[in-house]
Structures are given as C-alpha cells and as structure tokens.
Length: 129
Figure 1 (cartoon, rainbow, N blue to C red):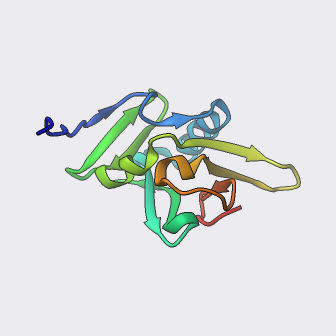
Figure 2 (figure 1 turned 45 degrees about the vertical axis):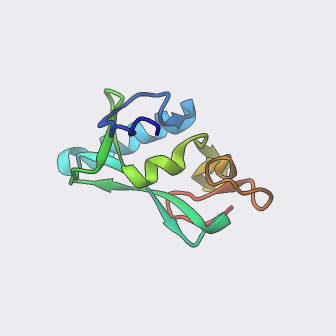
C-alpha cells in the first residue's frame, strides 16, 4: 500500500503554472478590486473540453479545502478537487487586440488525460476558444 497523500494548504509557483502575462494581469485586476476580495479563485467544472471547464473568479471566502498560492501581489485559492486538474495546465493571458483579451488554460488535456479537441479551454468566462 502506498503512502496517503497529504493535503497541502500552501502552494508554490511549481504547483500552479501562471505565465508572466497572466500574472501581470491578475495583479492588475486584484488591485482594481481593492480590499473587497481576498483572492482569485480558480475552479474546474463539468461541461467543457473533455468534460471539464476551467475558470476564475474573485473570492472573499477561503474554505477548509482550499490551498493558497500567495505571490505577494495577489492570492489564488484552489480547492483540492480543482488542484488535481491543474497539474500540467498553464494559465496564460492573451491579448489579440481590438478588445479581444482573455485568460486561457493551455494544455488541459494533459491534466484530464484526453487528446485532440481545442487547444485551449476556459477563460475568465469559461468555455473553449
């Protein structure tokens, strides 16, 4: 029998892969929201590519099941279930100009074990694109 996995409440940049562009945009957004919110929550839900959809929202409530990445500029909350789906995923921010900018979750199939389909899945509003 293998050793039981322990629940980690503190995360590092090796646990959550955030590109430089995404990190800069997250810091900017967190400053804009002010003291009203504690962190940015990353979530995973059913219904997107390969059955999963990735997204982000602001959060003012940390649960007992959340792990935290504290960058110094902002905090990210990820619950234990979502964290399992974040392995191998890179969060990026892509600005295509003309007001077309969004967060994308790259390499989601590495995390879900799927293959094919769309190359990036999820955004601040969810979905594939």
